[in-house]
Length: 398
Image 1 (spheres, rainbow, N blue to C red):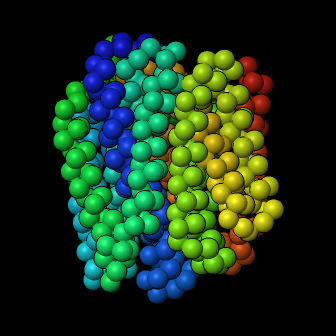
Image 2: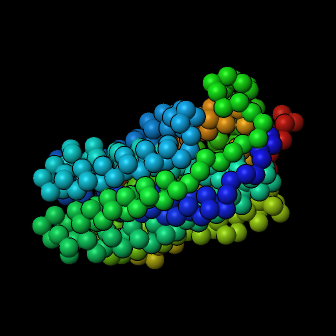
């Protein structure tokens, strides 16, 4: 695959800032969604439903988002995504004001759809540089989420004092303002120009031909397992900490904040590691970090146990996600990109949706250790798939 690097440097900077804004919304909802659910849900088993609906919204939005961007381009596609986020934040704030769990849950699903648009920021950057620079482009965009990882939990911690009668409503109103700012930034971008390849419906290999490549499927699996295991554990963490173990909201927010920083800060080194060792070995390092997450989480239930477990979880996600994305963008041709990207993201966020639904029920029924241990079989699939790809004599792209 050969892309022509034509994207203006301004575009990359604006994508970076937009990623910070999109990340703020996602992190805020991930921090307070379970807490709102535990206060408003009619059944304790439904406490994690808002978080699950966010992931479902992302999964359902993946294919329409890719098809929309194919028709109208990246610039206006991203603008539509941020407008959906703005409206959803206002509806979620209204749901809290009215005490409506149903309205709040439906609204945060719209923020999940916005995340489906945001997921294409990494592709818009990667497809505009030479293949060997794709890892760097992905890492730069993911680093933008650090801003969201810092701002989101701060909004969650401070906003109850702004609107004591409806905690977190103020944070959602501020988030709507952030999305409005993001709209202005994205209107200043231009569509990245690609070399070689049709942008229409036809051209390139079919999806069936793409998924028959072991290298392509290993790349997809790395993202699926990394995102699925991360969402599964992280969805359960605020409820386990705050509701089951009695940790305060400030400690819970700090753990989520540390986790989000740990998800994106390793992007400073993940691209150089790919250049030195390859995407496959980086993904294996992610599997090892997630295995350590399970070990630390099982060692105790104090604040530091949660903190270190979620930090390791973030590092593991980064290595799996960056490694998988880097391998993916070199496994298809320019004319196949929307087809391949839609399949990849639908697989990632579809599995994440199932994981988020299962996390709350498993935590409620069997406890925190069961949530941790249940991720180990899925993590084992990554090295097994890599071994299969090697035996098939079709090496994974790095």
